[in-house]
Image (cartoon, rainbow, N blue to C red; front, side, top):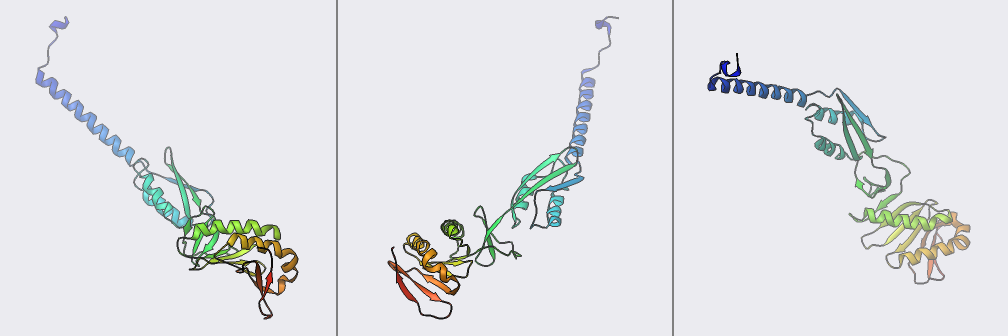
Length: 246
């Protein structure tokens, strides 16, 4: 029998078979999509140094998003929820076939306390964790919005005072933009708001020979003078202006 002798299917039959095949392919595709989009996440791995954020809270957030399935979960939304946590600086997410989600959390590293309740990270980010009971951090107080700039100013002051063996435990800027430094030896340094850098240089010059020998007796050094400074003594001696180069 030749090809010409083979029975020919009616056109409508061919169309019906094609439609059935297309429907079968569509159903199979939909079933495959449903299965893969809802492919379960069975393993959640949280990596990184997590010192301040509760791991249980992290896992709860991640698990809630992972319920959407291995392929369907929205990693962008998950990352947004993680970085909204006070201590979390950044988070990276990665799917690992066949059923694992790897999460790496990066926390802020606190540099100073800010206005009592908040912290400023080493990178200059202000955040308020709500339960920060960190000891040993310098205290910064000042007008709202000045925190990051004050951190940089503190670093400048610390670089000048460090060679003298003096550390900063507190830095304050009042509403008039006047500066006050609290040193780790209990001495307060008042710089005022004008010629701040020049006044600090004056303090650095006179400290070793003039002030350091009586450091235990000094409560405060006031440099708000044109060419000198005044000392407030712990035992109540009156402030006595002393002259010195500007």
